[in-house]
Amino acid sequence: MFTRELLIMTSELVHICRDRDLTISTAESCTGGLIAACITSVPGSSKVFDSGFCTYSNNAKIQTLGISNSVILNHGAVSKEVAIAMCENAIKKSNVDLTVAVTGIAGPGGGTKKKPVGTVEIASAYTKKTTIRKKFQFKGSREEIRLLTVKEAIIMLLKQLK
Image (cartoon, rainbow, N blue to C red; front, side, top):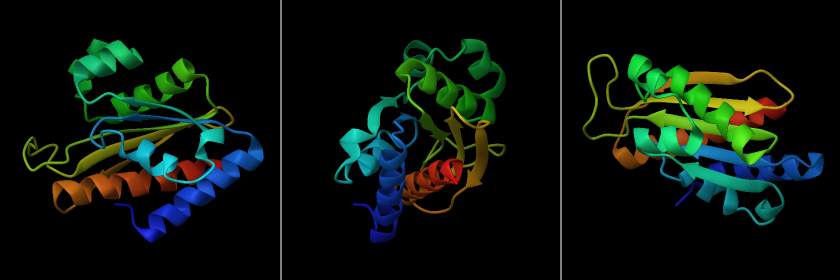
C-alpha cells in the first residue's frame, strides 16, 4: 500500500523518535487513519506511536479532539485554524511529544471554488518547537490525494525533528 520511499522516511521517523525517547500521535480527517497505519507498519513503532485520532466528521473533531464548533463554523473544517487546533489538542489529549494533523478534501466530490478537491491542510505540534502548518493543493484521484497527504505529513514530522 505504501511506497518504498514513504516507508523509508517513516522508518527514519520511528528510529529518530525511538532514539530520542519521543512519542507520536496523529489526528486525521481526510486520510482516515492512513498516517497511523503507515507509522505502525514500521517494526518497532510500538515504542513511539501512542494513538491516532480518526476525526472524519465535524462532530468527531468537536467531541473527540475538543475543537471549538465556532472555529469550524468560522473557518471551515478544511482550514489552517482547524488543522492547528487538531494537532495542538491531540498533543494535549494524548500527552505525547509530537503530533501531526490533516484535514482536506480528497474527492472526487466536496470541493468548491475556494477549496477545490485536493485542498489539504497539514499541521504539526512538537513540545519543543512552535506549531507548523502548510496548505497543499494536490492533484490526482482520491487515493493519490490521500497517499500524498500521508507522505507530506511524514515529511512534516521529520521537519519538526531536524
